[in-house]
Image (cartoon, helix red, strand yellow):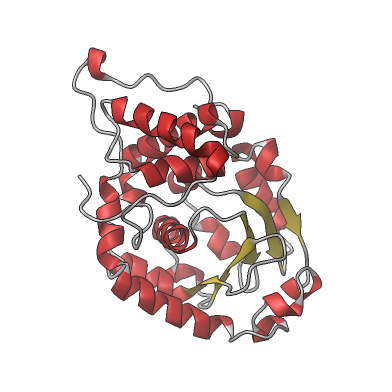
Length: 294
């Protein structure tokens, strides 16, 4: 049982729902409460998942099921979510994970990820996936149900040695979670400063990527300034905002202080173990946005 407000740390009461979708949120919330193995999802969860699924009730049910199921079956990613743990701290020391301050004209948030320590021997892929998911949960808490997200992955400094340290288990969990259960509207994924071995990277991940996500990927050998306006970017990408390292340090401090206990508490948001066959959830035959469940 959670003790804090989820999915929004500073919003214990229900967020305002567009008038035309109030009934759908109520229907989904009632359905949530009837699921014997679901965790203590709030009405805000119902609103968030419906919004992410573009107000499709059946898709939202499937996404909620997958969310609870993955959280229960991938403890290496979704348990022990202490931001001050040594594994998470190592990732935060090696990367810049940044939410950029200005929304696009369409209302999309830009998220930027890159290495700050290029040494492949220090990389722990499982901890990187865990930290990435924690960072994104914090961002959802701060943003609420916004119009969408654009992700920028900067490959500068990525080497073949990093590719060799990718673990298939966490990679498979990550791809399933992002495609089937992550409660946001993902609009585009830009891979910038694309490495010469990008074909090897794609050979590794492409079997796990469905066409819907594949259509969001865009590759560029140059930097974000050739894609986004300078008014949206940090100074080290030719923009106007503080450098990524500065923003990363500020946002990291906020996560470590304001969100530490909240993130630990999120480990309770998972499907309960089966007690017997009559008390089990029957998984939907399809998952988020009509994609097949394994």
